[in-house]
Length: 171
Image 1 (tube, rainbow, N blue to C red):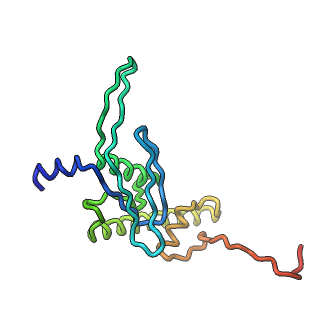
Image 2: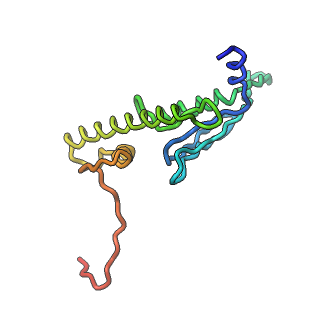
Image 3: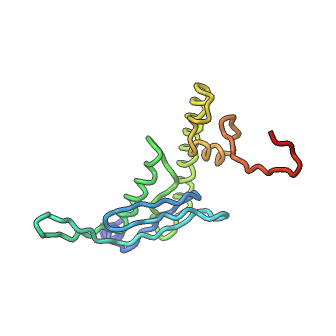
């Protein structure tokens, strides 16, 4: 990649974030609030477009300095925050695309990283279950990971709606 194309990429007025999960995320910054869309059922990914913004540095003495923040910097910051939100070495399936849509290699890499993170979550839940046998210590993301990996675990229960049957005995 030439220096000219690197400069063009950094100064581009738009960057695109891809999300390979159904989960949506919200992030608040001084220069705006951003919602990263989750993918719709049947879709492979969701895209969120981010544009260049201007922040203002306030010196506190009635002087201010406008600071241009590139779309790519914003997108990378948002992805870093979302992906690190679930603990050490976490990855929640959100990344900045190299182009306007994610390439096959980017998608393959994102799915592999997400599956690896999900396997680590399930392993941690297995260890906790062996230690405590308590549903209270298994968190929702661990349950989601087991479901996405198609694993049936003793600790992975799914709340189901119950119906009352007319004439059934009540205790």
